[in-house]
Image (cartoon, rainbow, N blue to C red; front, top):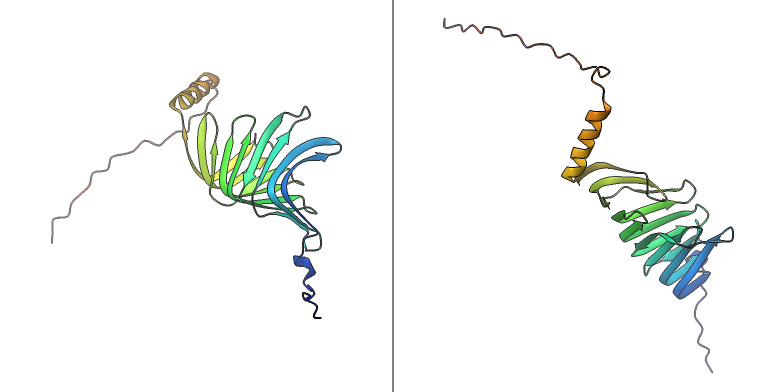
Length: 196
């Protein structure tokens, strides 16, 4: 009788400590439910350095406030969570929507839980009810209420630009605003030398 055994796995860091399928779970912080995670597959590897959670089949988060109202959702095709660094790395069709109606779209986003900020170094699009911005660098607070889009281009509604102009005109007192003096251009007669 012949035994059929597989060879031992020596590369222990490639083996997940936990693999879960069809996950729909709530995550709490200090006894308060903060997030819902929905994913097809969740791998946890604490041996690999740095240790990480892997979501290769995509992930969907909902973020809750203290009264369990949805503040935001985040989704991506693939995600890694480096638990010791509290750093999320989201890739592929990343979408974030907050309670104010802001929609963020990109192919990559980092969420730093220690600095409480979101950032990306690839093309990103931010759409709010008032405007649309696009750029190759994005930095924001976790609630996406204060953000920067640089190397950007965007569009603003005509009404919002006119309203800003009116606000600037009514708030500026002409006696307090210093206008830089521009030197007057002087005309100089040009002489032509016709002697050859």
